[in-house]
Length: 380
Image (cartoon, rainbow, N blue to C red; front, side, top):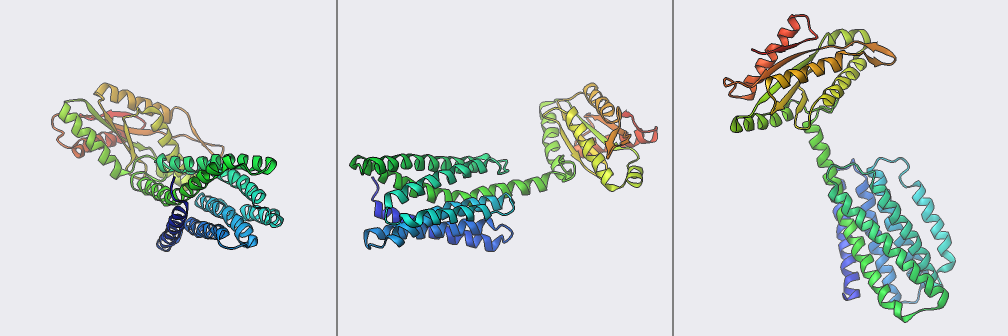
């Protein structure tokens, strides 16, 4: 068993250092107030541990029981407030503040009954950590590991508090039982370890989520959620190089929305944006998992088709033509008839680079435009 006073001291120091770290992070990223809540939660937990530890030295239950329990409850409530702030929930701390006020009223007459006060505190903590576990489900992230770790820590904390509540309830009804003392000490050790570990994971959760957002901004077109030009060339060039190395088929499509300026002029730019989003959805619906689609211009799209021969590429282009032009797109109950022109290219020996292949696809696209639009043209 770990030496409890040493563990408490280390936990206090760690939480103070984590609190300072989160304040520094907030100073650097002042738009994310969640770090303020989490920083204060660390300081409050350290204060709670100090206040509760004073029971061994002074007889002042108002301070060492009542204030300590209120601080112990406040720390996870602040952590939850930080999560709600991170999720941009309005009124992040209103309900939590009301809950803490109720706890303050409930615990006030119990400061002379430490066992009963600890039971109430354990029940509140179990509920708080359970709620925090459910709240994590709504945290958006493409890298689930930090969220999973935090959910496991919260879930374990809730479970430990439930076990502690059961033990304290039994002790309250039947009197203190010496056999429970080692178990309660083990619970306290885990409580300290879990709280410190949880505080350490919070910044990681935010940094991973922010990294995902930056990746999204760097690689995806904000309007259509398809790849942007830069990301398309990165992905498509890898496929193109692989097709050359393995002597596999590789095809590409260049697609342009017909009369798009007229749509903007007649229906407005908001309608034009809605049309582009709808076309992007139709493109996604017709492609395979390995295909790469991107918006590379105002109303122009590029599609890379790895391991696709000429006939299959033409079939995909025909499906796109039918999906987009087969029935009108409705915008605010107004039908808007959309068509596209598509240039198709299959890699040939003269295509030594992706850029050369796409130039030929673009030439075929403009041939389709000149020949009357709403058609597929295969590059020669």
